[in-house]
View 1: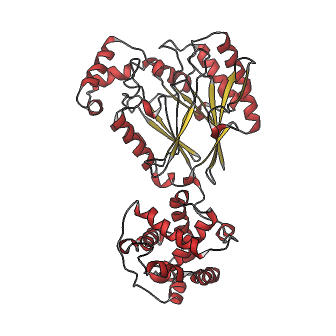
View 2: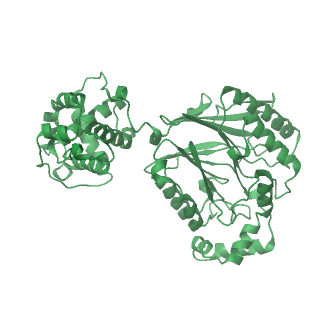
Length: 482
């Protein structure tokens, strides 16, 4: 199953010159051509619909409706948020923002504002809220500020980054109200999000525009709730960034250009295709050729875009449950020296997270384990083939030349923890084994310098070794009453 969508940002509709008018007209035709290639699921409009707080007239609605029609969508599949140009500024609001920013802890000050002060900040977006209701047919949840849309194929967390937007040069100082942000994101179903659903967040401003401490807090929540992509605009120039340095679940940050042509803006928008079955993601940046008046792929955004597309893997969406064909081992032969290196590298990978203590003296007869766990004959034959490598593992574990004594239980404890997490979720040992292998593979494959097929095979061998050495696969699935 696949998801396809467009992100269009920074329309600044009241800004009109010759190049901009032609470019916008050609955009509608170009989107219509894109739709002929494959259907779209939704549209993201990430702010600055108006220009410098101007009015929202019928021409804006007509143009946006033209985009929606070209994509073959309806308003239920449109996600629209405000930008800093969608704000009306007044002296009272400006003075309140200045007071907040001068306080010892501005972020905390925003969270404890009384209703009157909050209303002053929010009222700056009144024109946008009225337009939203008129155009979308529903009220913008202005009291919540941030809100969540959930569907069977994708979830969208809409973040209003413009609460305190008021002045030039404010990038790096913006605040979102951490309490309101957390209330919105915690509505996401974390368990469902682990499955085959695309999770995205949108804001007008890039994450770099948020005040640093609040930015790190937002990143942590995006990590906790399995957000795969964050999309923004504001800077009128496209970019991408993979936020992998601190997050357990890396996410892709995409920034779109603008739909105006002046000396500052790059006229550009983004198309994204995601395969929910394996996480394969293709991001295409389309840019306006001013000289020859046509839309085309942009291959000038760096080496990863030299073909006009950014290819990215959302590892969380890789298949959690392997098919029978995928369970089969690769034809690659195992080199014992490389297997030793893998075990050492795996210890180092796990050590970077935590250190465990355990003992490996708990053994139960394998025949009883396999019988009680309702393991199939195929799995037992595989187990026998893997067991020939147990000597390599025992050699590693029996010497401090490879792994220090205090780290020798890392592999066993990792596998035991996975078993304890999943042993009640499945009906037999075969399914539990596949789940354990899959989960460990997804956690570590990007960090280990071996082929994916060999990593998976090595993990299977280590898991079988733990079944033999540790007190797992001891539950009696045959005693469970259906």
